[in-house]
Image (cartoon, rainbow, N blue to C red; front, side, top):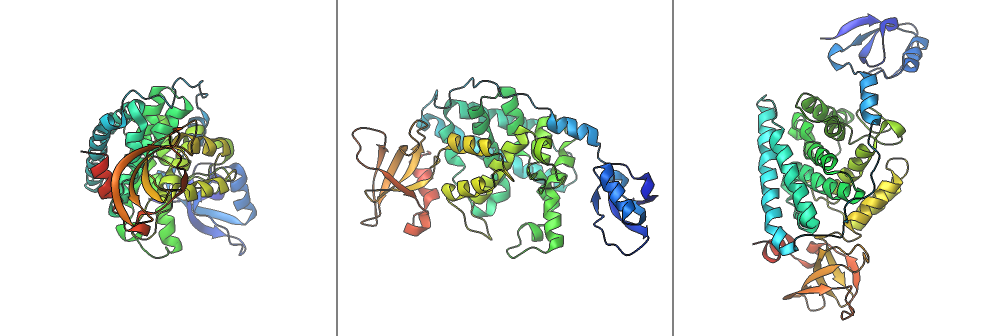
Length: 399
């Protein structure tokens, strides 16, 4: 219930719904949180006398700042990102099963929230553990799963993909396993608040109105509110609630900036945008990874952390596993294994001749081998050659 108070009674952290009484005709934007005493002083200077506030939206700014700025220093890398303990083929079906279980869990969680039931985060913690185990055995298998997309399942798949990519990213950064687990769990749930956004807004094919866009932007706040009493760690809640914050303060929903945004949140902001850009949705086409990397780099340093963007690209590769590529020989193939030492020379599973426009016998080609005289030319889209990439993935990589 809204409450009317004198502007002199405002304190940082209150949510102002609107102006009730003022002197003069100066128009000010009043809906939103007042985060500083300077902001309150501006309202006074503008002639505002009374405002309506929403007591239910009060933010404890001191606690928030502590949560968002307290982060453990990055340890010296304990894990070799090039090291695997399982082959791709032995890990592939485990990764497929994990991904399927995660989708079912996401669907159930959305149903629970729709029905007004409290979300159970324990199964999400278990799925996150499974992701991490798989990533440490062979990260390429789950990375490949993130490339098998169904355009009508974006809401379910996006959070799963972000969780997988965050696990790979955090492993590359050398974080302890418990930190990786918190990041993976928070990423799995980072968009849970979208269930409170009307479907007609969430899936609108045309341009959103200002009011609709404001509602879309609230989903991160909804995620934070849903998870605050769930038993998740502060790190997981920060990842979910602040993933749309930007270094220049122009993000949402809190307008955090610079040192108010910790390293973990900076990481998920990068991963979230990357996966969104490379996804095909009902109202937009997908980008190839290189195009997405260019956009991330263009957002540095205003929106994204330049060093972290570089490290993210390094950890998933210029041509990530699962990317369809064309070779100088005009053969087409899927990147099936990363090459951290020579990123432009990954392992490729060749299966199509662009020159003769027909499928060929599937062949594993190591572009880094001295016996291979072929080279990677570019990443391409399967529709350019009428290729059913999902069908090929399932036949070539998974039983």
